[in-house]
Image (cartoon, rainbow, N blue to C red; front, side, top):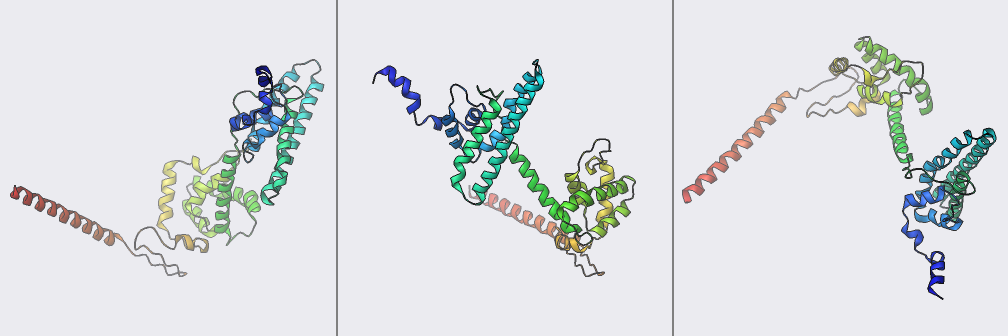
Length: 320
């Protein structure tokens, strides 16, 4: 074999080429389709650079490849046929990504790893649809997937919704979906109107009826606030800080003994401020004397330490 023949066959026999490309380069190679320098098997192997993550990157970036094609189709003379062609290819690519999600779910849940090759084929097929016959170009650097951030926010909101359901369970019996869609918007507007109209006492009484605390109103309710065009955007976070402070002071004056809050408010943070909830009998132990005694003990300890240091210094100086 001559040196020229070796150079011609170098690309086809190089086994480590797919190992040298990064995750983002692999995603770009797949979504750009059948370009002259990337045949089917090369794009297929690119999926296995990181098969657990490459699908998310393709899902995030495949629409960016076809967007410039749609804009060019709008400027053509037969724009309707051209736009229809682009949209049909986009629909086919979306179907491939939907099938990929179903197959990957089966792969992860049922441990059916024989479907991994099908996942790779579906990703390559989605890239071929959006890129077209001659391939296309992905503008800019491949964007990192937003799924991870959205999934984290979704988990956080599910946890907050479970806490609200626990608090409201004494008065409201519903599923999480009904609580989110029906009860929370009504309670949001009700408590917001009471606080804005300086009816803090009435708002606190209603909170005790439903088993809600201050954090539920000012922090958790706004997590499920949906902006709607044509309606006022009333959020607890937009309330004036002075009004919030006044409401907080009045809220802290009272004792909230609702059944849903017993496990969370049975022990306060301050030492000695235990609250025993026995229906009507509630005894609060004043901890100011304990705090004063602790401060005196700490001051006495520092004085002792300071006296020891002075005595040791005097001994050292006398020895010299």
